[in-house]
Image (cartoon, rainbow, N blue to C red; front, side, top):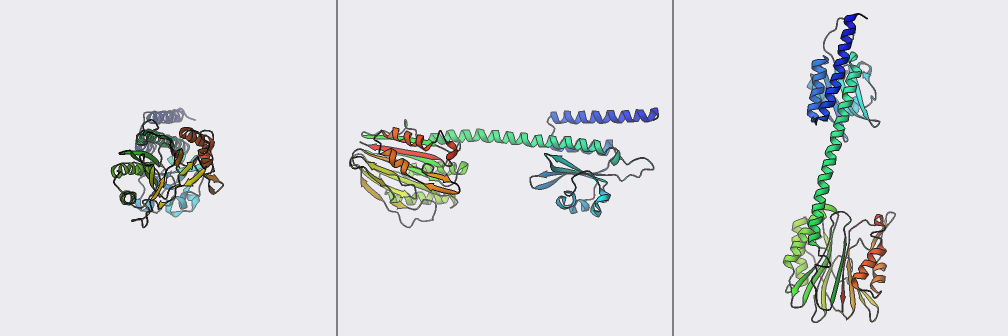
Length: 410
């Protein structure tokens, strides 16, 4: 090899090393994908003399054309990556593909990550060479290496953006969870009435949930209470529940009849959810003076009332369909009962009493019925139910929000 040829080869090798170093520095300096692609084009077009380039990248199930340098638009529009390129899993000369659509190009270079093709680089020359090897062939391995570096960088950028999005979502979910917890009363913030012990339990399946309970003072020795569950889970359920809480608080007073109250709630929720979600609800009004409870069960799990002097267990079922299911609820039945001394009431959402068994969902209230009749305080009863349900010890068995609201009428 002549000294001139040796010097040329050394210069080319030095150039390629410097180019790879420059690309690494560009990546570390947070150069955007568009900048990386433009740098790739400049190296091939301007420095190496490879004048035709197509660069495809897989985006999910689709393919995106990131770069077209000097290729005829008509040809590019006709290329179907799945049909024309995907059959080739290694570097292939276009002439060997017998695909006349690609004849303006010379070489097809697949880019693999994790044993899957994630991109294609197609390169070609239009210059005529009197002697020697075409630049597409001479620089083939270098072009492949450069393309792999760019694709790794683009994947790292994608993962980094995904991580940032997940972190932003996590912070938003934490904020939403704190705000939702402000809407749901804790045992310490619930109103107090002589002869009434109240307790509650709240365990959302995710950071935010679709369960809600509340106790609303109505004046003159009366209070209302409710427990509700929005269909579905996550942010959309939590947003609708926040809307529901505001509506319930605005409408609920001691003068409104419960059937009218349910009808108005249904109207508001139909307007808010457009029939895409519904809410099951148990709502009641209790008078501490005459110990009378009125209630409507709007498609909700039946609260369980236990009377200790005779051991009777009653499921409070009277009511209507859930709200948000129909434009107008055809029948709303209001239940009424006199609450005997010592009675205990446990209201709950379906996450407490539903279990999965393979593909089947089993409904069982035996746990609530057994615990409510133990004779303990209402707070201890709710704690016992949560413990035996395995909320803390076996969270993998829980697939929905769990809420409970309990009362002891002394």
